[in-house]
Structures are given as structure tokens and as C-alpha cells.
Length: 102
Image (cartoon, rainbow, N blue to C red; front, side):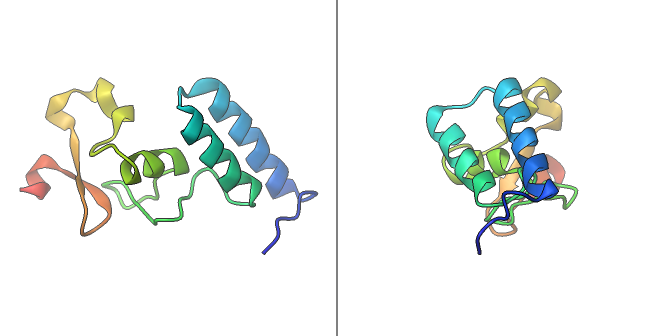
């Protein structure tokens, strides 16, 4: 399926991409893959692997990408501290609290 580059949704996705690129530090590979995802007509707030957080909400593309290709837990949650750290459940493809994980 080809994305309609004149649609409002596509333009909104491009604006969200630009905001994320300005605000979120990422590697060149992450940036390149995120751009490809959005330019194909997908939203940043979705991911092709259907990964979800502990609340059952889809992870955004960058979060899911980082899990898929190298991070075992969310580096974006470092500020919460180790007591609230969530752990990735590979079978369910989502984050779980430490209590749920063990």
C-alpha cells in the first residue's frame, strides 16, 4: 500500500517525526529506520511488532525498535528509578512490573 502524501494524517505524522527527531536522542540507524516507518505512512505511536507497555498500550516505534534490537528494558524510563523498573516479557511482548515478572 502506498501512502497518500497529500493526506492530513501523513502531514501530521511528518510533523510528529520532526518533533521526535529534535527532542529524542537516537542513533543514526534508529533515526533512519524511524523515518522509513513514517514515510511508509505509519504513525510514530505504532510499531510493526505489536509490542505493548505494561498497561497494554502500544509502544511507539522507537521504543519497540530499541527492545527488538538491543535493549532488554526501556532506557526511556531511567528517571523512574530501579524500584519501578519494568521488565520485558518476551512471550507476551510487553513490559511487566517486577512483581508480575517473577
